[in-house]
Image (cartoon, rainbow, N blue to C red; front, side, top):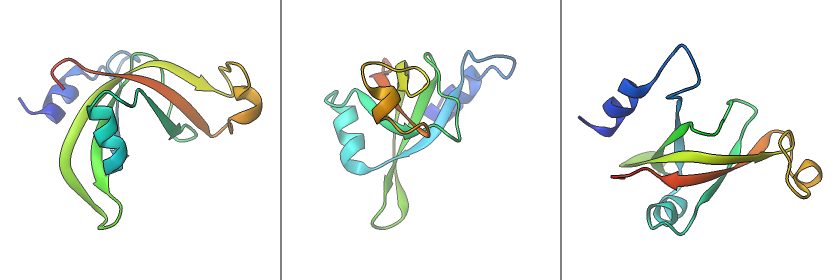
Length: 109
């Protein structure tokens, strides 16, 4: 079963469990996440309701040529920092339309 089919099979439309967000990821960020070097992601949150336990299907997107590369990763959101759920100065320093997602690579990714 391919990655997208596996994710689709886990989606539970009756509740939050199994929510998967399909998002673009630029190559240099994708590579750092794949290597385990980058364990957070800054995302616009005004169009999505990110929550702990949700997963991201990161699809590598080359912005120079405006195309997806075909590489994908699945990560799980382990913490959400936002102006609504602040830590330290985030309620003052983080724009309300954005959030910082702490992420972990899914097993087998």
